[in-house]
Image (cartoon, rainbow, N blue to C red; front, side, top):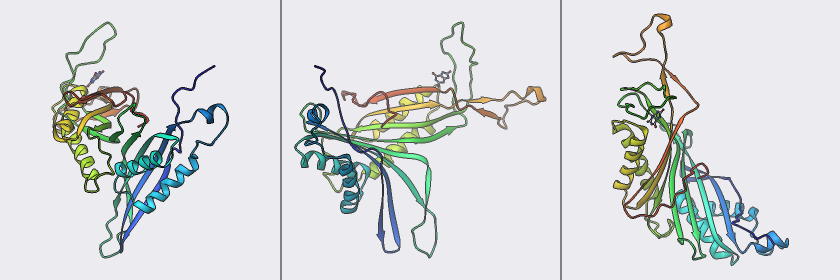
Length: 306
Ligand SMILES: O=c1[nH]c(=O)c2[nH]c(=O)[nH]c2[nH]1
């Protein structure tokens, strides 16, 4: 008889917006929450008995009810609260993985009027994934934070040369190029304590600090490859955030090619700059994990769904 392998179920992409009113000043948290539950689910797959199943509809309702009742202190703390609830409240549920994407809103300045107008801040998305596992087969808590869609560019201080050559190599060496990428990064917090345990822990500040170090390393590294820049970005986070044990970065190399303007009698490039063609595909894809010495590597190689 076939056996049932890894399985999980839940509600994906629950879009919840929490508005907190502080008089005329409003605060918003805009999340996309995905719940994945696992446990004693043999029967529902084999016999059609739903007795062990907390419905995905209930999972969705719980997200909304928790946002109302507990508020959203941070993506990490909110996800931990949900994960703890699903595992603690249902004997058939042994593991909960909560993924959160947060969309940032900036205030539209309206001096002297109410502070309730916002503009979406770019394409950047904050991410978090909390896994609470009561099976004993995995760490009881795992906390990942991250960012996607963080688009950055250096218009100089990037060279690329000295690489392998074979009969198919045509790439010209460059001593000065544009280096641009859309950063996807996921970092793992080493602490065994869940993010909702300490109300004083500032997860927003920790996230902002990691982001700042990623950006600072990108801007300050004189780069001989995107690989070298990636390692500096990861190292800065590991060196400056003592709670972070591991970070994985996925960096598309958004190629910018100097346009050949010779046919028009123009010299493109010089001390006054140049015109580039921004190619959208194909792109180089540079990915690596940077670890604190001795820390285990737990972040999956493929970050696309995190
Ligand atoms: O920073 C780079 N790393 C590479 O591995 C690579 N390969 C390539 O064609 N261009 C680049 N740039």
